[in-house]
Length: 402
Image (cartoon, rainbow, N blue to C red; front, side, top):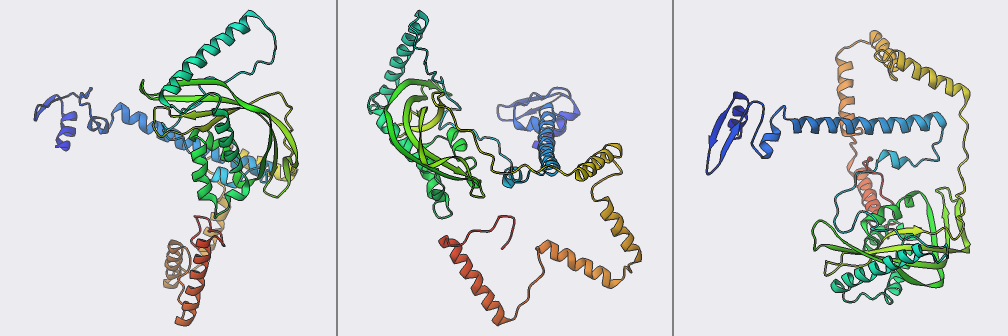
């Protein structure tokens, strides 16, 4: 049936009759409003889809090549994490368990002036807070403006304690991720976890300088009018210790012993239309009340050698002038071709070639062991697998079959 539909689309105007269905095809315009019409070769939708796919592939390839050239030219390998460009950041999936951002970022008024404009702003904010407080209270009966800061502080301390490096070992990683996702929204999770693989973090909450308090309440619907999300901004003024070490164990930021005063506004969000929703950290607005300590550069910048720079520039120039003749593996293929001239392509030569192809396909030579040796090797492999399951040994990278 589908084949007839496609044939009729190119053969001219025709009609297909079915159970209360009447479909009209033309050569120029297809009036079939289904996926079948879009699959027809030459359709505008398919052309646009192919163009966007091709553009995305070329952009990703260019970005990867530019990163490699930068690292090679400037010799900045230690500044950059290998895994970050090897496994590029994937596009964010559609998620409706939280909003995409902060509804209305809170602005801390430190001017102290009593003008009519400031008074009007405060009255407007107070009115909005009362309206949205009622909206949240209507859907979450347990919410209370004065009791919420204690719950928020508990969530804040638990979430930030989980970011400490001992919680991200092979044994504890899965449990930590599950617990953290219950305390942090998907919007904030990526920013909080970023960089933990190649750094050591030690954080500790010392004490509160001022008790936490709610400074702003907001709520908004998403997708439908009855699907509401609530956001509460809590002001935290506390003493904390933070020490960040790089992957070589050198101190990059903070101090493990000296506590610093921190003033920040943390946004907590909840899907208030959901009967089992939870308050989770959604974002953070840092205050400029205290000066921030600059990040220390723990990796020395190596100046590129002049000779190396000249050779790289020469190669780039050759590639621009002769894009079809020049390529990086040219000299290797010339040498290989010259070697083939002197070799005899007899039966033995093609046998070796076939064997090499089999070895490459199976990723290693075929190992044939005697029974006693095979049993010993198998026992060792089983012991290693057991130790990996127990967490005593790490798992190898995914691209190695060990």
